[in-house]
Length: 288
Image 1 (cartoon, rainbow, N blue to C red):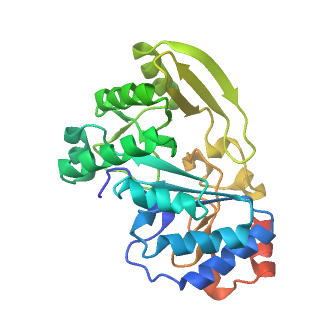
Image 2 (cartoon, rainbow, N blue to C red):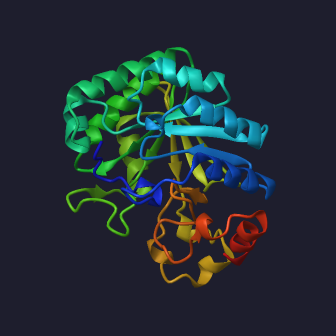
């Protein structure tokens, strides 16, 4: 896919991947340092060969820590079921278009792929195997598509993470316009009746608001952005702080071995090829 807003979790295209054993060792060391939640992201993790073997290896190294994945839903439902059977705790599906017309516009892919994704999501939802659906709401572009997804989520009793664009550092094409999270909430309330509103505090993520709709869907909205939270000591003096509009707290480990604390900077990363011991990783994290 060539989604209009993709930031590839900070990874560069065409880089040289490290041997998977080195990456697994790094995960083990991060677990030893106290990391308790691990997530496979992309790109698309389902493209990795023999992913079930990797999931088994991860589970053996992180014990009972949380292990999840974000996928675009293009694989057969049976492959996701296999991952859940070998150690994955949950799978979240990023929906890049729920109707064929917008899906093709947003991703550059044929509409038949949208049909395949919908079939996979239906199958997994009927078996209660989806953690949540992720959806990026774009101004004057996909509001009706978003509503159709919320209608489906209501029928299946699913949770949807409604996201806005990360518009810093040239991640998105100029034609794509951004909503604030407050505007997305107003958009939802203009169409649906909210039965209940829950304020959610999570030490591993940013504060959020859960809207329980009368149609059966739940919609999660971040009510803060990373620049307001000062996750690391260095955030207070960071010159790029105003551009840090992520909705999650995360340390990313890219396929080429880069440990990266945020998307808007490349001068505060740690390269495992230059030092991958527990002490070196711990010293790097402490310095942040």
